[in-house]
Image (cartoon, rainbow, N blue to C red; front, top):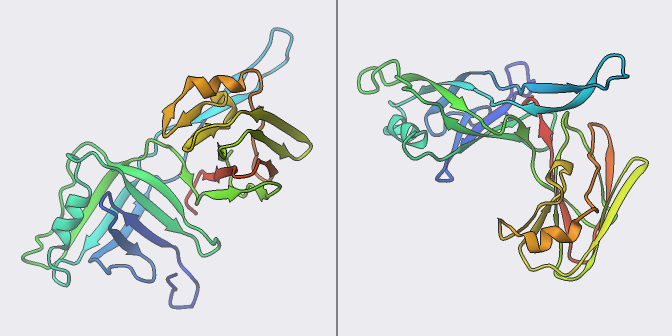
Length: 266
């Protein structure tokens, strides 16, 4: 964690590119690869709310919401003089032709774990300012696209009777990973609870517990109607709102994987 001159901790920012290379761009170890972040903007999610009403109702009520694409803008200074080849390597890491996503991380001094955002180079050129062969430094601004629309935290795994409290400002993503034997999965959120039994499922099975997904079931990443249909009329209706706690019910060998979601990296 970086620190200011008065001792206050700062945020750490880094990028993991599509090859797995880590670029420390701001904080305690910034510039190790020759790239320093000078500005980042437009990194806060926008929630597009929907409303619903009935013929006998006065006014409207929230009926859900979606998260639009984020379009972060990242400006960096590249020290080509101290790190020969840094400009070329950084440019290749953001190649539009490859079409790979990079991951932008932000570590707050007030949190144990970082938040991350999957990003792509937006269409168009990112012409640098300065000639690395002459002045030894390059300034560059990248326009990015984050189609997921929100920041996410580190995955959290819950076993049977484990509890987790949502510290985010959005509903988390919850996935059930059953064992290979029949059993019962359930959620208890404050005063509400839900459970459903299932037959034995093959290794590599995952079940999406988002209410909108109606328990969509995958085997090795492929949606499998044979097992998906076993949940019919027993779909999970519960979500974990900000500040609420959830207690997991899973059989032997089963776990819940929770991915917290946030509107901002702060």
